[in-house]
Amino acid sequence: MRPFILARHPTSNSIHESAGPMTDRPPIGLIRSVGHWAFVSVPDEEGLPCIVHYWHRRDLSPVLIARMLAHEIGHISDGGPKHWLGSEGEEDRADEFARVAAEVVGFLLTEGVLTVPRRSTMNRRSRAREKSLS
Image (cartoon, helix red, strand yellow):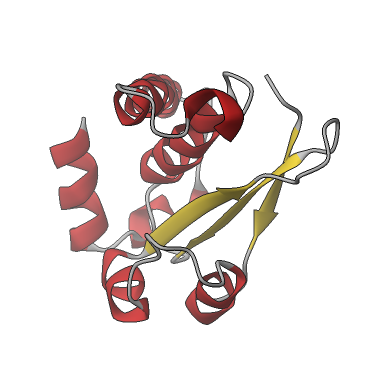
């Protein structure tokens, strides 16, 4: 796995602008309505870490945050884009990383190993989305 850095963006505008001219960059309105987004930037020079850029609303469920980050980390787990760009099943592999992370975080929250003080302020949309993804 390539080394990576997690870079949290303070606003949806910030992450949208950081993505630059990505071909699959979603519209800013969609990013805001979903409440989270992430992407990986991979440096051209070997040995430098990849950067997982992410943003999420403050009230987003920890399970959804883990799912989002794990999906992006799943993309770089096999060496980066030279190995997976255009490869069949790549999104499925990244989604599997995401599902595992969501299950682990959900379990740890249920067991009380992890606690999130703000969890009670999570909005209905985040709770409904969390249930639909598990």
